[in-house]
Length: 217
Image (cartoon, rainbow, N blue to C red; front, side, top):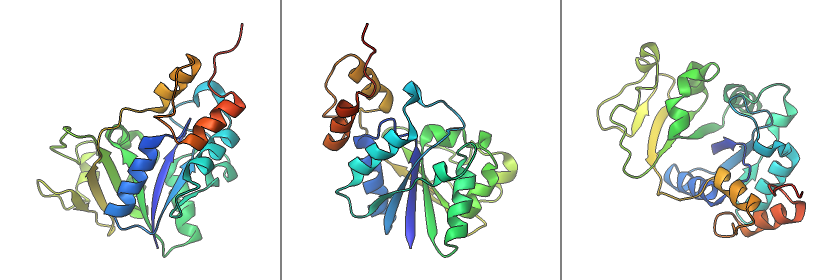
């Protein structure tokens, strides 16, 4: 089975997350995409202290109509910070035959060298980097230390770069979508509409539970 892994705080999940998942599903010919909300993000706090339960429920609501999308609470089951390498190792242990495609954005890729045991990621999954239109990666391996770059077989212009493990680094360009979780939280706090930015079930959930609203004086 070929499984895409899309992690994040999902605070809240929005249309761009779903679009990325659909595009990678089609482009990489995956069997499914597994959404994994972070329980304890290692690089940032969860804005507004929104609980894991709420964030998980919003993902469940967003993907309910997508039969090839699933959600996992694996990072809640595991104690400690939600490091991607630990999650991937546990998934691989659970099913050694499964082929994983770890989906990250360009900003995360540029910071990849600072991630815990980042060199081990490439042996656990293909890495799918989502770039934005008009942003060309002249040297896709530039964020990596020299020793790690030497583990790839790179030629200029490649968008599918083989790693010595047998996995690959894939560079995909996603169409621009003017939406972010930060913007959604801000709009909700200001009483502005968000139905064009997030799936309707997620908007309904936010309204029902009063998430992201400014405290009443």
